Each structure stands twice: as C-alpha cells, then as structure tokens.
Image 1 (cartoon, rainbow, N blue to C red):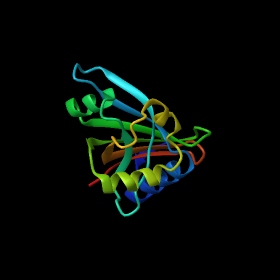
Image 2: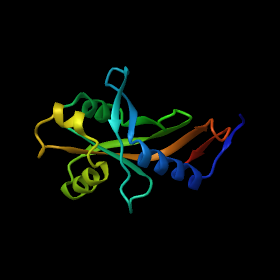
Image 3: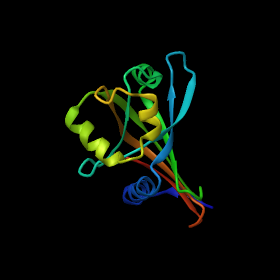
Length: 151
C-alpha cells in the first residue's frame, strides 16, 4: 500500500461514511501531566457545519479537564470490519451551547445509551467540538492510504 496525500473531499467523504455507518470511535486526550487517555465515544457530524466533529459529555468527566489542559486530540474511527480506519486530529473545545447541543444530540440519535447510564443529569451537558486539522485514511479494502491537512 502506498501512502500519499489524499484530497479533502475524499477524507471528508470517508469521515461521513464512517460516522453514518458506525459512529463509535476512540477519542485520545492528554491530561495536565502529559499522560494519554483513550475512551470509546460516539461521534457526530452536524450538517451545515463542515470541518467539525462533535460529541457530548458531562462537565464533571475527566476528559473536560484534559481538554482544558491540552486541547489537541485525536479520534480513531473505523468501519465494523476494521478494514477502513480514519484518524482525525484537531483541537477540541468543551462548551455550553443549548442550540448546538440540540443539533448534536439529534445527530447522535439513540447512540448514547452508555453515556445516559453514567450521567443522569440530562440538562447539564457540554458540547465537544473538534476543529479538524488533519486526517489519515487507511482503506485496506481499496488498498490505499493517505493523509490530508485541512486548511
């Protein structure tokens, strides 16, 4: 497999396909001591807001402190067969925005069962917004890989 640059359109199409088919991914953060942390998260794209990847969290979860200390994060998304893997790197911000929260929750749909089990305070949520800076695609089914910086 040759590694090369891919176009932004190809990368964003892959992101949309992966989030639509299986929105569960791995989010990596770094805490205030420089230690990495990974966790399963549900990701969403909000139509009309290209260049961003979204999720929600509770304000008292550790990832909020990690993001405040080190806002650079990486997501890893894949298809169910794990033949297509997309790493998304960017800067994440956690904030309250009721209008956007509604859009994000709608995009997340019914995929937050584990989150609601851990967080009963449905009215106290933060939107997690990742500004996408780079994407690296590995598509074993197509026999290709590539990288793109988002301008």
